Length: 497
Image 1 (spheres, helix red, strand yellow):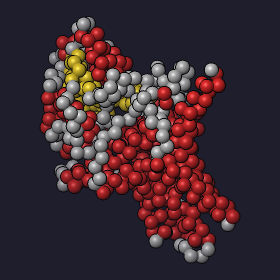
Image 2 (cartoon, helix red, strand yellow):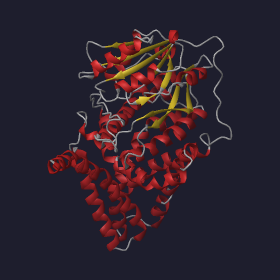
Image 3 (tube, helix red, strand yellow):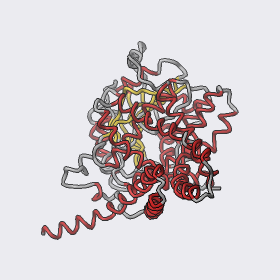
């Protein structure tokens, strides 16, 4: 049974590794010339509504509004909606900043709903009913769009069936910590390899929830925003493409944003994305396979929607790795042929690695130096398997949960060199999450397996077993260290006084 479960998990990981290998070597391969955007529309700039869904974002709301108010776009054609569901001083800050820009001729309004029903999807739908624009740009609270964003994005709607153009995410605090650097690597590969590769191959891609522009007619035709999954962006993207709309990736347009510096915030974000992905798969996979799309599009769409399954498979391999090798050494496990076949998994690992190489070569001039972080990245992905594996299980069981926002901290206020720190924010959650205890337990378990492998001289299995132990320690230790930050600061303040 251990051998069968391990083989199934390795097979799933191999499929996803091979898919990344194909995307990296094929459609996502860098081109000699960049994809040039079409020229500005000859008939003039269309009307655009910029939607800013916010909920208790006191640290970043003013920066967001200022950036959107400074967009270089004809004022007569631009409307900004601050879709504010906040329950704290964010309301007053948003109103004050909106009033400031209205006095300067910007068409900006703060829209509040009677209830927070439907969370972000509900806010977007509520604002869309009142929107004036033929196109809708959406930014989360921690994003800072450049002034030329709309003028670089709108010309790409050069065909009537283009329903969305998605920009790449940049990173305001990439170098803040190991945690943010791992996230930056993962997101770079997502946009540079997965999004770009699927788009160039004519397969389905997704809106990433922010830093994109929708054609309003596309949203309406696809059935509008729905709150029955935690990833309303992925849901709408697939419904739109199943209705015949095309989505486009704009790799050369980047919108900078903040990466979660708090490990609990990262867990919250990852749990929402992972569980929501499973919910969308349950909702739309059957419709995808019943559509008129080609077999290749259906296959790639299935790989995309079922990607969260990677995490329980990683967790399964970590748990079974040592017992499988030890039982085989004792003569009770599978033979050499089994392990020869399992050795093919290294091909999948090459796919994951090559995706990182390709993304960093495409985006960064110092890509060789950045690739030194790959072991940390691998540890981060393995360490997340507990948190995200639990999210997959909840999604498969159909358990509903609330949309929990990811806390956002302004880099200007809570940066490493400033007098403050992110954990001083009222939004910061530094408690030790129960997942951290499971990660710590798995670290001890994998360390025990490592000791037994060394004792039995099974040297070939040591590197991966060590990686498993270090990976779970990575996230568990982050939780324990961040939980001590307020107490440590308090002790230092007391000593200074």
